[in-house]
Image 1 (cartoon, one colour):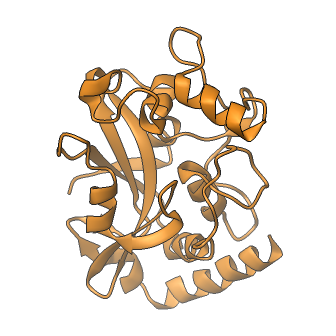
Image 2 (cartoon, helix red, strand yellow):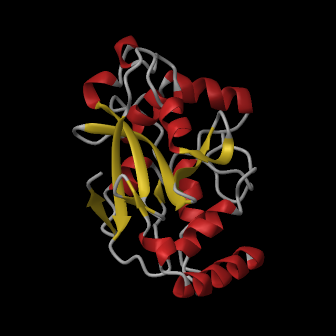
Length: 225
């Protein structure tokens, strides 16, 4: 944590000296924006979703869905060298930084259709590139299959929460009690099999984050791209 705070402080100084890092745009997306990938609610349960029964996408959607779109992933955008980069945590890559096209390919459904993409921006973007620089320090860390804090592995919104920390050490995004059960109160197949394989209890009620919860944060405003 001490090393991370040093990185954040140094990056905050760089932001104040290099405002172009904060306002450079590609497709209307700016450095530090959060990119949410989702599926229509009607597509997330069953084989027609392209996700498939027992997939992590289906499990996340079942446990955390809102009324219209089930957001299954959250990523951090960075505009650099005329390229739109994505920093995120996935099972396929762990914590990684890659171009936008790789991100879209990763979340293209089995039927070839693209996911719904929504972008949100901090209403107050002061020092936002410091958060992005902090996120880049996690590249190479594994994906957090246990969905627990403090194990040096990260799932998508956990990476965002761990990176978006103010110079005085406060998380911008709050943690909430996690829920892994579906709307019927039952544990989806994916979670049941995962935690049985890990030999760990399901972390229901433990502090965490999820894409649908983060998408509705009052700290964020919508972006048209």
